[in-house]
Image (cartoon, rainbow, N blue to C red; front, side, top):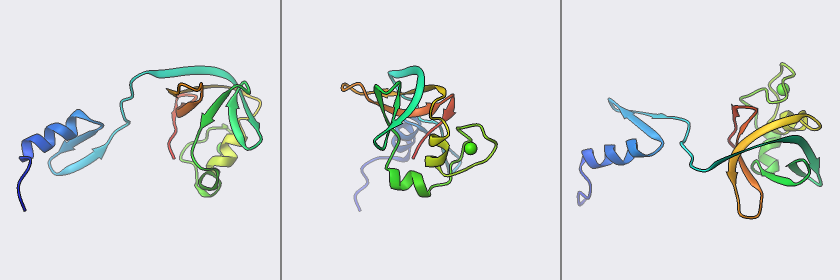
Length: 120
Ligand SMILES: [Ca+2]
């Protein structure tokens, strides 16, 4: 197999992104995103879609996955870790701050909910 990159180049590529390589271990850190948008408003749910103030459509991943995946965070603050979907349903009607990538159509890919990391 032809060698394309030396180990130094690979390490430089990895450390320039969202990974840190130390002594043979790969540690995944919170990715660094540019152009994070923060929006605060009332968390709503209409026709199977979560919104802020019924206007900013939130991208939170496939609903089937949210319904079977245990949430790593207690987003609704009820003291219980539930499925992601149940956690997000628990936010309906409350004022929430989300951070994420704002798309040209005004929708938001959510990376943080009330400063808790969100991923799917
Ligand atoms: Ca909960």
